[in-house]
Image 1 (cartoon, helix red, strand yellow):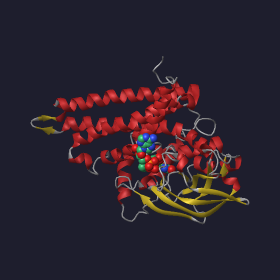
Image 2: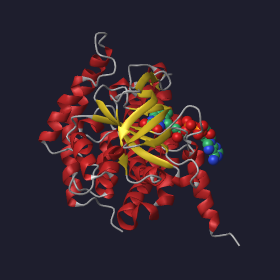
Image 3: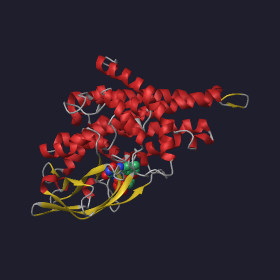
Image 4: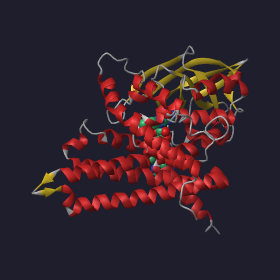
Length: 404
Ligand SMILES: Cc1cc2nc3c(=O)[nH]c(=O)nc-3n(C[C@H](O)[C@H](O)[C@H](O)COP(=O)(O)OP(=O)(O)OC[C@H]3O[C@@H](n4cnc5c(N)ncnc54)[C@H](O)[C@@H]3O)c2cc1C
């Protein structure tokens, strides 16, 4: 067992760390100022992100997430430590490198399942960072963690599909640069449960698509990355050529999309935890209460030590998962993918909570990134499958071997 990163990963890590120091961290106050500008177009991506994208492209720090010829050609094991670094500045670094969700998952999906025409029309501009995209599955009316519940109808009518339904929490869809929605809906409600759904490409400007409002997350609008939209589809007609794959394959495609997406979230979240630990250590070293720095209190040392131990445990599990995905495939890494999806958000939540506590009131204020990081990380226990759903399926697989 070799715990070292390979030469290509090391080279990219060094390059990316330098990029973070030179471009990304100095851009954090610029982003804050641009977001606070009362005259800004609320849902447009702040211009500092386009500046960073130009700098990243020049250095070929671009599409690192995408394996194969279309992307940087990295394995999961090579990309994982790079995703972690981008998590240290979660609002800026992933979009700067064209490595932010949900576009990453959508690009993977189109690369894997899109027709040549769909790839040319939508994947190419996404890879170039010229447009943005959204993935529309969740519905307010039904428990969407069980995808078989999805009620949106996709009905064939001559050479078109007609879509009717309501979705919400569709990340990125408030962004005016978001041009394409990948919509999940039922094409055949009478088929067996996992063959009822299909996926359809719906341009955001198609008549009948109404982007109604931006949903908030603990009060944050997440406008810097396109918000989370409620979207209404009323008799929306698109050509039959917009179907991804075949009718009835929507569920299978959704599952394939989520594997890599989950590991990316987890690696970035470890970067968030590292940033939180750094902030906690700095604050505890500087802040004096009852005659000594907070860092000299045993309880604070316990938070710091526990945070380090938990981060190391998480990283090892995530890297093992990445290695399994590379060697035995996403299916073979099913248990581990679920394990990291369960373990990472809750552990990072614990570390963020301690970092908030060490900061006192400042920890919940807008003057440190901690409150917003906590809010964003908390949603990872719901999004891409709630904890309980992953535990249910992991436990069932574990129990299968004991069945008589
Ligand atoms: C910030 C954010 C961004 C999102 N982005 C997107 C997006 O871009 N596109 C998209 O389509 N969706 C998105 N979502 C939606 C997200 O994927 C769903 O919220 C999630 O799948 C859960 O579905 P639901 O909200 O309908 O909860 P429900 O399905 O109603 O579940 C509610 C709760 O029930 C419990 N539960 C469910 N099943 C079980 C079980 N078997 N055993 C025990 N308990 C159970 C869980 O605690 C769960 O949290 C986003 C959500 C958030 C918060």
